[in-house]
Amino acid sequence: MRLIGDDGTAYGVVSLEQARNIADDTGLDIVEVSPNAKPPVVKLIDYGKFKYDQQKKANEAKKKQAIIALKEIQFRPNIEQHDLNTKLKRAEKFLDQGDKVKLVMQFRGREMAYKDLGMGKFRKIIEQVEEFGAIVESELKFMGNRIITILSPDKKVKKKQKPQSSPAIEANVAKNN
Image 1: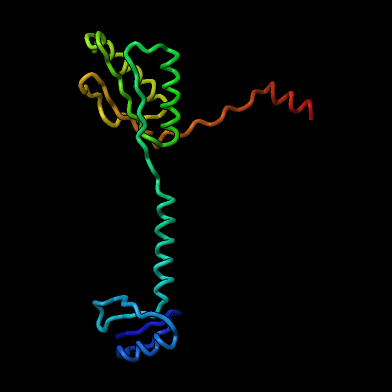
Image 2 (image 1 turned 90 degrees about the vertical axis):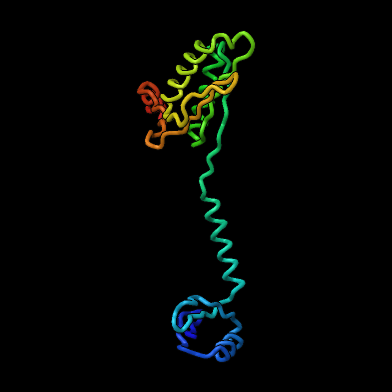
C-alpha cells in the first residue's frame, strides 16, 4: 500500500506491517483514503481529531442553512379595514423575513351562501400582499369552508430602504451644530 504521512510526506509503497510500525511510532491511525487505486492509498492521521473536525464543519453548515417557515394568516369575509391592515402588515413582515405566507379565508354559517363575494375580497387581499413583493405559489383553492393560497417572497424585489430625513429636519440639525 502507498503510505502518506499526516504532514504530506510520502513513505512510498510499504507493507501493512511497516505501515503499522510507522503508525505506532508516530501515535497516529492508518486510514484508507483510496481503496480502488493500485496500490491502495492510506494516510496517517489522528482519527479522533479528523472526526471532530468533520462534525464541526457539519455544525457550521447547519448554522448557515436558511430555514423557511410557513406562516398562516386567517381572514373572514366581513373583516373590517383596520383589522385587514393589521393582518397585511403582519404578512409583509413575514415576507420580509423570508417566510412563506399561507392566507386562509374561512366562511361560517350564512357566509357560505356568499362565497363569490368572499372570493372577490380574497383576490383583492392577494393583490395588496403582492405589492409587498410576493409571488403566488399556489392558486386559490376551495377546501370545504375555506379558501387557501400560499405566497412566497420574491427574491428579485429589493427590500425597502429606510425613509430619508426631510430637508427641514436636516436644516434644524445643521443649525443646532
